[in-house]
Image (cartoon, rainbow, N blue to C red; front, side):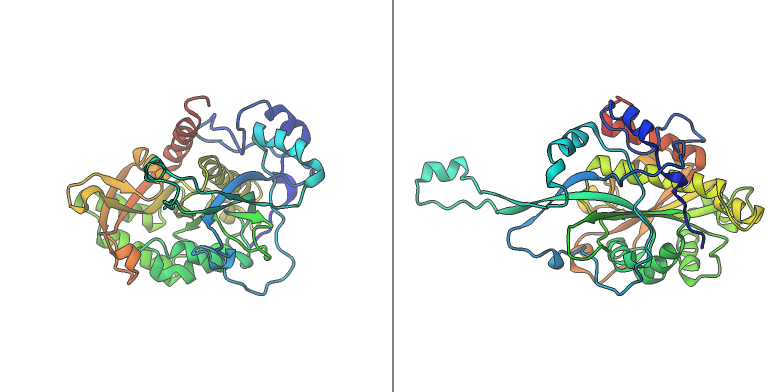
Length: 371
């Protein structure tokens, strides 16, 4: 596994130039073959993005469904990579410069609705009280300390859940191409995982049972009209290798953070190709030409003819730029929450060009055509 260098970090001059934009985080999608930003050897203070997480009042962060489990790890973790701040967050940083490092919990008071007001002062509000927690999101390289957080998010995808441990292991070892959304000061530890994205080469990891399982799921359920193409993509005999594109996140993650997650993965892939160690063979193994996404989804109305509803909106964007898409019934998980309605898996096969095109569409969707 090769380690990343500070060559991926942005210079101070670049950050100042981008501060005038409403939100310039990660590379701009100006080219189908290059979305990554220019690198610099200069190192600055780590930059973070600000967001909010809402949870029921009195709920300890350790009780959250997607909180990471504790694990002993070395202190030699990768430093969070730098990410430019949105303009509004840059302004807020100036105002809070003498208060950095502190995290405050602001309690949102329940308000009585109009019906309760009409009923009189004795009526109690049924509106739940929530804690509003200010969170500084940071984008990190893959690290062993994130294993449990990644595994927990994988469990929310019925198709990937049976292989969650093995896939999490491969991803934390795949330091070259992978990004984790974590947070500073959210809990006492530093292993919180709010989201992740990674690409696993179908050929390099072809002997792994978890990759063989994913291939089998794709081929066993592939319709006849796409079977030949799918066999070719997963064969490892293409000019550029294919990879399983795995990503997941907490469901209420801010849209801008989601965009940055995908942008950072593009930066990872471009950086890995340019800085590959191990010769030409290693470089080629990281120069992906196609991606296979196994996206969780359902159908509206619960029937077989309803509209396909993706759990993550970005999967729908990838699907709209794909070479072909097909769905199949996801395995039962034994989870009451997941099994209460019919779960599907949408297999999305998208080329590198289609992926970069999808990145542009994602930016337009989030920023309303401003990019």
